[in-house]
Amino acid sequence: MDELDTALLRMLQNDARRTNRDMAAELGIAPSTCLERIRGLRERGVISGYHAAVDLHAIDRSTQAIISIKLRPQAMAVAPAFQEYVQSLPQTLEMFMVSGASDFLAHVAVKDTQALRDLVLQLAKRQEIGDIRSSVVFEHHRRTTVMPLPQR
Image 1: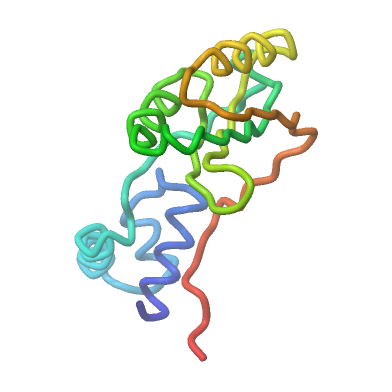
Image 2 (image 1 turned 135 degrees about the vertical axis):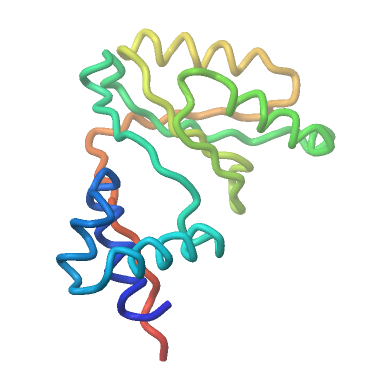
């Protein structure tokens, strides 16, 4: 990735609806060059998709939590199926398989603490779970622009 690719990546992450012509003009390059560079970023897998950011408060899902899940040792064979199940739940925003005291961390968003309680109790009924804990998220800040790290 060179400086031009990095600039295009930053622009698209800040506003993916910007026109090709607008970005080309700002960068002082031909629109065809801009289009080819963006196509190259997609083909190389640097840009994996585009999405609309949603305000969780606006859709009545303002209570966020991280649910820490430890599977029973004998249940590790079904870990991929369990992960798919949790990811399929409408409350799940993100799912992480991790090392340490937990096997999975699920980032969820629900209407309120009662809905969070209901979700945790629903999950706790699963046979493969050995331990489950939840932590309410008081504040959540997401970096919206991710760039390559500088080379040493």
